[in-house]
Image (cartoon, rainbow, N blue to C red):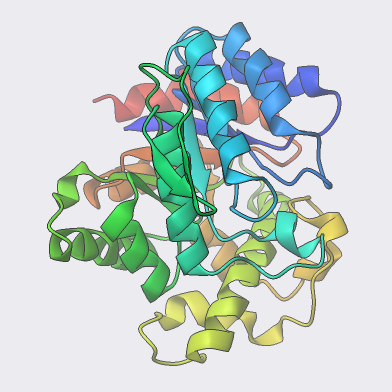
Length: 333
């Protein structure tokens, strides 16, 4: 199993670079950041420094979207980083949540997301593509390779992911939901004539190593609110029962009354009180090191290739060290 770390690009940016560098020395393979350029600093500038400060770490957004950046710019960004650092990037992408809603936009359609994935991947890899009614190619992009991993929850998004993407990002670590979503993505891949085993499966969620479970829950409750934004979209589209969405994913948002993106992804977010402890325990990985190892083995057995830690709490260094010293080595056996 590979391991990643997901960081917010809060100032100072050098703290993000330092955490990525330390994560690599502790055995982490991937360095991710949010991509919400109003709430946090511009990530692509920081990626160049993250790549420069590390030797093998693969870097990218968790996740970007088709609405806030011109697709040709996104492709050129990745192609440039690959040219400079040797194909050490990955593009996590979705319909858009905070980056879009903060600007007053709704997330993009799946049709737009599908088209954008084709354009970004082809251009970043130096191939010709039709964009905005014109034929485009990045002539200097030679030898660049870019995997596109799509974040998804609902049935139609999971289908698109299986049909088109190189990998699947699930932003929660609940084994029941992991099993359902991974099966849906792989089934869609097989139906599209693709090899489902070729899809890379990444689960991303907060992880906090320690003994005070109540404190850990409070520090990670924000994540239930973040996931709730996506689930609310699913409920609006499919209803709160049926529609192919498991109730394990939809039941908990019944008490959701609103959301303030000024507190997005932050411990102590006051708009996440509706998230019960049970959901935090299922969606995140909390407790002592043995609890983390047990859950990660369960996820690995379900076909998960990478676990990426959302490192947004008051024990960033301690959790990184615990993973590097005790948890990652335990998963190597």
